[in-house]
Amino acid sequence: MLRLFAIMTAAAFLFGCQQSPADAQLNERSREEVGEIVRAYILENPEVIEEALIELQRRAQAREMENVYSAIERNVAAIYGDERDPRFGGDEPDVTIVEFMDYKCSYCRVANEWVTDVNERYGDRVQFIFKEYPILGPDSLEASRAALAALNQGPEIYELFHRSMINASGPLPADRIDQLAALAGVDVAQMRTDMEDEAIMAHILDVRALGQALEVSGTPFFIVDGTVVAGANSLALEEALQRALRG
Image (cartoon, rainbow, N blue to C red; front, side, top):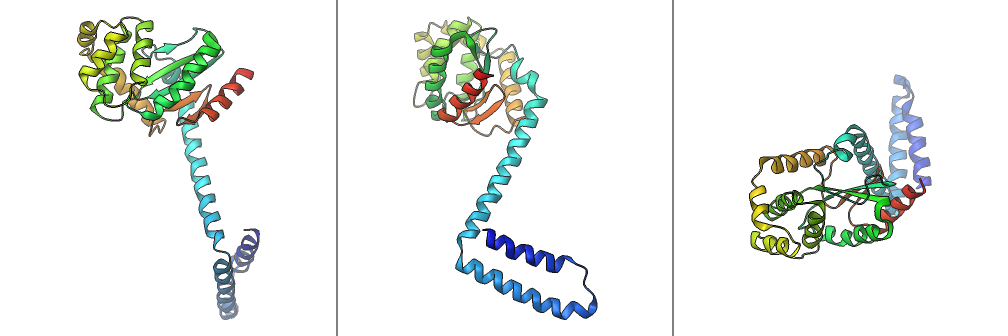
């Protein structure tokens, strides 16, 4: 890659200067010669194309992350200060973790193992804020509406119901949601009534708008004390958590 860089640098130097008409023919010949050198090098070392593509991808991802972190700075109040959002953990935590999640997302189910483990290890030192972000169809929306309706019956009831649904594999039709709710101690009839409250759908739409502003294209999506971790990457999540705890 360094050799190719040297070749391209030489070419740029040669053709970046102002040309006089008298030099045009000579420079055209030189251009052809350098082009042949570069072509021959690439044919002998085709891996440089892959390296260049990887570097382009890395730079694109870096630009995307810059955009995400800028969006986080602009939306701090909505991320951390929305009192409608369900929360686990202490009211004055050392670390706050935000998760955009969908009950039908299998990766959210995997990530929940880490969430549960952190909750058991650190208790009130860590607070989780859950952003109900149903993006996987009507069942997802139904489940989120049910969860937020159950929150009206108390945070403990929500927590049990949340864990029950996030750990459930397969479809989540209405009758199954009701069964899981009943097992979690939810008053199902009251939940169904509360699900019709326009405020619940307004909350979900606000979270959706926030997710779009943060370019959240999939779940789970974590913000660990300001550090973004996309996906069920427990190693990256744990590293971010430990950095935050060291503070």
